[in-house]
Image (cartoon, rainbow, N blue to C red; front, side, top):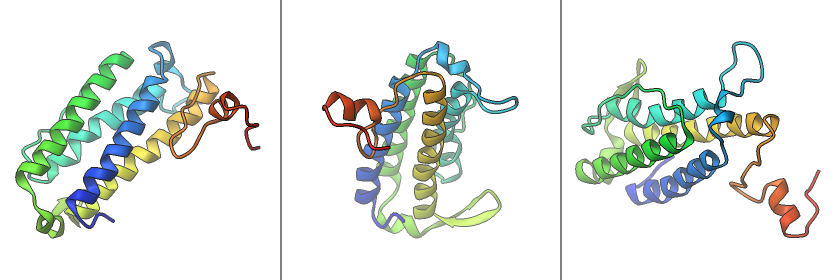
Length: 163
């Protein structure tokens, strides 16, 4: 759970950079990768992460409007993600204090404190990054290490990857 804005900013910095790192390992061609009929593509998952940067905060009285768009290139996804991430941080810095973390808003039919909403925003993108890395492996793409080295990164260090 988020206990202070400082804690959120530090966590968000790492997690948003991790999301960008995953996006940077995509190719425009890989965005159409789908593993099973009816499953989300890599592009749909990436777009969903970007879309959530406006959708969830739009419910928190931060002055952020919900946007719906479909980005078709990796560069566009990265650019919009960075822009919307920066706008989120700026809005929180302008409108909230640590006390604001205890205020409640209606989120998807439930009353959530703002600290829970921020935590959900973080863990939501972690969840979908995990889905993306599985699809990336299946598409033959390299997967970046996020919380430790990926297989290829271990190998580049001359250390056998753990099985």
